[in-house]
Length: 368
Image (tube, rainbow, N blue to C red; front, side, top):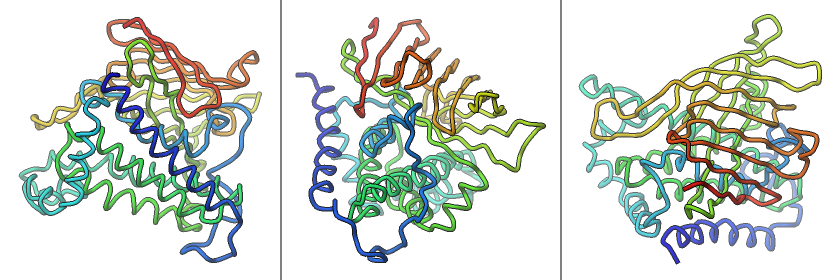
């Protein structure tokens, strides 16, 4: 058995065990007001769909989507030596002061992870952008959607269930990243930004305001386990915003964020679907030893969705070494109703293709 398969088993065991525990102990409705915050009366982030990416959603699939996101950068992150990396990330989290001191102290930590306060290291502050866009906003939306899913099914403690999944996925993601991030990075993500995202989206008024003003959506790729390379492939999760108040004629502003960041327009179609496009830049590789710590390249994407559930996408020069990527979700074509497909090519035109059917992770094969 390879190390990669061991890592897969380690990652898979945690959400499965947690979901089994929650299912057995929390499946009865709770009395109103017993949790710290009131439960959402009307779901806004979880909307059951029979087509598109949302038809594949459940908290288990969302757990994997978030956890495996940074595996889009194979030059930086992978599942090799996962057990050792998890121990290292845990050690950094158990000794936050030492982790911060290892990276220059508290002032450097604030400057790098929260907001710029040191002009001598002003370039470091770019590292704070993912903390706000991915961990706080993106992670907060993912948490809120899970809460509404658990609530809709009568779970006794939906916020506890969603918070548990959110924080476990955050720690596992830090373990996947630990070899190419600073010692203090897990401290900021796990102790500050993900909890702030949970707190923010636990407030019904704030969650409703963000939904009303930004009209956000979560668009995951069709993640799969590649039987050829014995690795995860086609991973990724993006957060989309189409503010209703920012329109050009009949089109809305389209903002696509994640490891690939695109800006464009979203156009309503007579069918009721929306066609969106964007141009921008995707992260290829992270290099800690340089002042400019991320290699970027131009990217362009085209997306078709129905009521914010992604039906199909095509991205040229996506994150990492992905040169061209197609994702087709249930209902994207009339003949494809119950499963999703993907086809991707890397920069050397090696191909990977796979499908998913009612499981958090699909299966794929590749040419290498």
